[in-house]
Image (cartoon, rainbow, N blue to C red; front, side, top):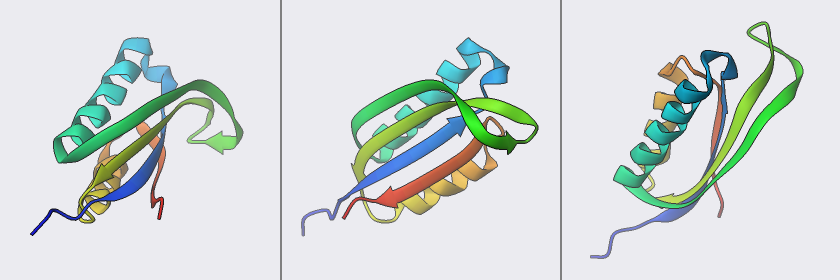
Length: 97
């Protein structure tokens, strides 16, 4: 039976006050995590953007958009990992279907 996959987007806002090298490490960590559990279609780094309102007393963050395909079970696990990663201020994982 063929493996069932679907298209997803993951949007992360990373704390940019941790430094440029640490931000790159977080982006790489999630790229590798997605690649290990699916296929990374694209990683679109939007860079530092100002927030419309304060998040954890911060005014800006580093935005990253991942497009990927994976099994339907993986996005829930990705969302869980985003929520327990201290450097990730906000995240959203959605299905593109």
